[in-house]
Length: 168
Length: 152
Image 1 (cartoon, rainbow over the protein chains, first blue to last red):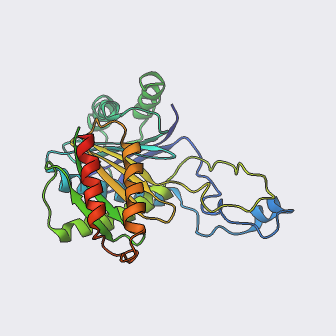
Image 2: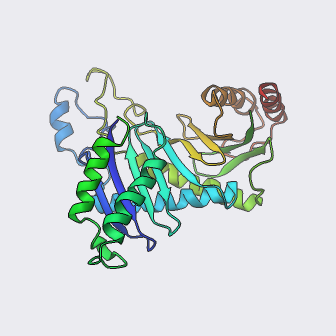
Image 3: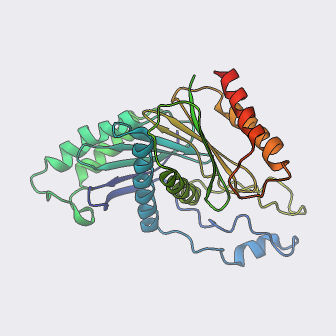
């Protein structure tokens, strides 16, 4: 399976941890633009400006949060309060979602062929986040700006988890 | 097998058709449905923007005119929740068909294509129908009824 990115959001809507395994495509927004002259297509492609400014990583985080927040609201509105949003798939990627009882949100973007990763996101919370971040006496209770989350143990644990536990 | 409802959202994000086949989803006011359709339209656009995979290179030779339809990220196609599943099909002109089914429903793709055919036959070919406006076509209603009931 291909893993694109992983985000943790706290209950104050802030992204406290994010990790990406692919660079942001530089050509987003301009791939479908017709070039004026087909003979120097590559040159035109390289010089013309994207139709919209490319998204930065922090833009991505905000978009992902806003999106899962709205989708969660849509799902509870239609399915009742005990209904939970699990995942969605587009033609390019699949987004997996897990929310803890304390409203922390774990989001993972993978390729489209992966089965639901909710269980695995729950494991990341229970076995890595709780163990290495919550139980760390030096970490603050809240994590404004992500302070205390990306510590050595958590990073190493996440790395091992991704390589060993996640379905290939 | 259970099909809960069908929504048709026009290219501007307005809800033009809303039909419930089976109870099971929360009953909302028509205003709420309109809001939901509008916000879904926005979310769909964001899901297309978030695409993390590098764009697939154009398969056609450079001499042919570039088509605006290939290489375009699709946006949300299937949404799963613990109680239901939403299949979204977007036509080339931006109209979206949302089908709400049970989580383990097979063959939703074929079903939504068939609904698109019904739409093309009974709504688009109806001379009294104004595009982008709410759909009030009896034949479309009956076609859907027959189709969903036969399937059920």
